[in-house]
Amino acid sequence: MRRYGTLGGAAMLALVCSGAGLPPYLLPGAEEPASHLASTVDANPPGALGARTVLGLPRHRQAQAVADATAAYAKRLERAEARRVVAAKRWGLRRAPLRAPAPPAHKPKLATEPGHLSGPGLPPVIVRAPTEDKVVFLTIDDGADKDPKLLDMLRELDVPYSSFVTDYVARDDYGYFRRAHRNGSGVHNHTVTHPELPRLSYRQQRAEICRQQDNLEREIGERPVLFRPPYGAYDRDTLRAAASCGVTAVPLWAQEAFPDRIEWGRADRKFHPGDIILTHFRGPGEWDGTMTDMVRRVLDTATEQGFALARLEDYL
Ligand SMILES: [Zn+2]
Image 1 (cartoon, rainbow, N blue to C red):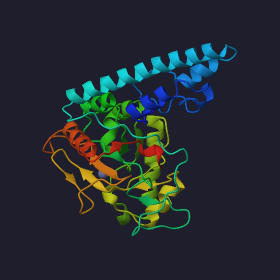
Image 2 (image 1 turned 180 degrees about the horizontal axis):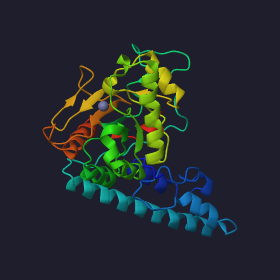
Image 3 (image 1 turned 120 degrees about the vertical axis):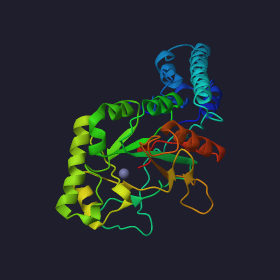
Image 4 (image 1 turned 90 degrees about the vertical axis):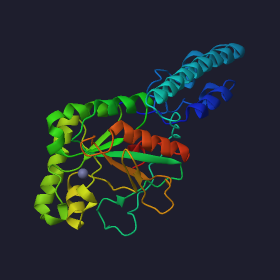
């Protein structure tokens, strides 16, 4: 699966340039070849190249080989960033979105958000990921409106997002979500029919959640590990049922985004590190605007507050 670039372009450039005189094993990228690259950069990191090509050469030629590879890599990153700036302009953003820092090397231990149900063996219910990085996460629910421009915009801007998909509105075109998945987006569980789960028996809840696990595994090719209950409504049976078919976390949300506004979860009307943002696959039928208008609002607001969008699956 493709993964999004996660290290800020400028930061990566600085690292790469400052690494020009280092031995190959100290160069950035030597340990983690592809995951920090922008998906638009079809490059091998210079560390890997250096390690292969310079062994056995005299020292000054080693240094030259590494410097050449590093310069070529920096050039490719620069071009990828330039393409992103052009895309930002084309999609009407005020500035190119900030690049997220590298994700944590080890996923943090999740703790249930205060005020939510928890217990042994139950997946944690969260509204933010535990991080101090200035990153937030865009999550898009249901799946009724399948605006192709949304996928184009997020791909061209190299912005990560995660989908929580309900079968009865998604099933007429799972191909749309397969495309999103190919672009690097996580596709997760939002039940078969979008019921208010606490009104159902344990068996009924289990059918709603576990059948959608099976549907998504069949349609997308990957069994989800994240589940979001419709309306954020759940009880202990919901969490037990979700755990029984492979769900490891239940992300709710801290903010909700619309084309014309953001509904803030806190009085300071600001993003906080790790906040999860909810929005929906909806269009002008229900909204005062399009999905791309909504993304523009989220990105411009995040950029203005110094936040980058990051990949939720890298943190949970
Ligand atoms: Zn929903």
